[in-house]
Amino acid sequence: MEDSVCDLGSWTTALPECVEKPCSEDDIGVGQWRAEYNRVSVERGTRPHGTTATFVCTERGHRTSDTKQCLTGQWRGDAPTCSKIPCVHQNLRNGRVHYSTDNPEQGTTRNVACKAGYRATEMEDSECDLGSWTTALPECVENPCPPLVNHPDNLAVTYSEESDGSHYPHSTLATFHCVEEGFVLEDVNEGQRTCRKGEWRGPNTYPRCTIEPCSEDELVLANGELNITESQWSEEPDHTVPLQPLYVLSVDIEQVTRSNVLLDNGEEMHQLVCKIPCVHQNLRNGRVHYSTDNPEQGTTRNVACKAGYRTTEMEDSVCDLGKLDNCSTGMCRKSMPSIGEPSRLLGSYL
Image (tube, rainbow, N blue to C red; front, side):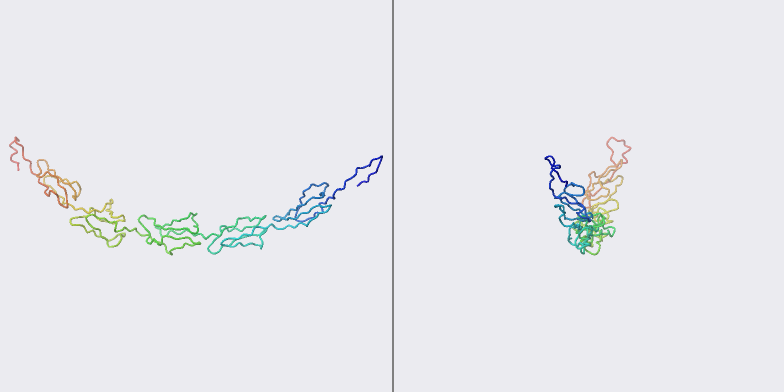
């Protein structure tokens, strides 16, 4: 602002310019915020004409949209106001969301409550921070069911849905089955439960395992008939075995099993067969050889005489319908000597 003097035809100082007056940074005001300027300072502590001041709130979770502008030496605009940053208001299917304030904003806490029969996937409270919730909104899902107790010992359960073993999700189907082979559920209508809203729905009692029955239609006995006193086989049924005339069972009945018409004679399994036996015969001065240990239908028989004897019948015999087709075993007689043998043997001929 120094004056200029004309001296020897020239001004002692150059002609100054008229420029817009700057604004003092001290005039911007003070509060819970700081100012950020879009133009650099020309003189320390001032900002040139046209500078815009944007305000940033210093308290966490607060913000303002207010600005000021320097115009001919003065800051024009409203004083900045910092307000809490809001969070989205959310709703929950099958439940309600409770907020600690009417309008969710910085510091507001949130928790959920599910309606009866449902549970929240997460129970932790959430807080609004910098415009976002610290945890995602949980879901209300139908209550899971605890595992069913395997009771009694012979009863087990399989589940249609996978689980860690502590709970099974809604709509899981639980099916009971018997562990021991040869046992079935006494009542198949009691064999399943369904998880509904935290409870197993189905019969109130556990099913029972019983020995698997065999159908009478599976019983086939050639040349005879197997009768039992019950409509189906039980563990130890009363039974009779009427056979056709002359027929007997191939094995003794000691225990009726659950496997069709198989019997257990204490050593191995045999199929029940009706056969007609033949009489076991012995031979004087010789031996009778049978093709089976016990002569029965189809057994063949032949004889061998001891030294010095011959059989009266050489033909083999077959056991058929309880009789041998050649009923006689023959006899073992002393052999006749050939012509020319010493006369000392003649006295022993038959």
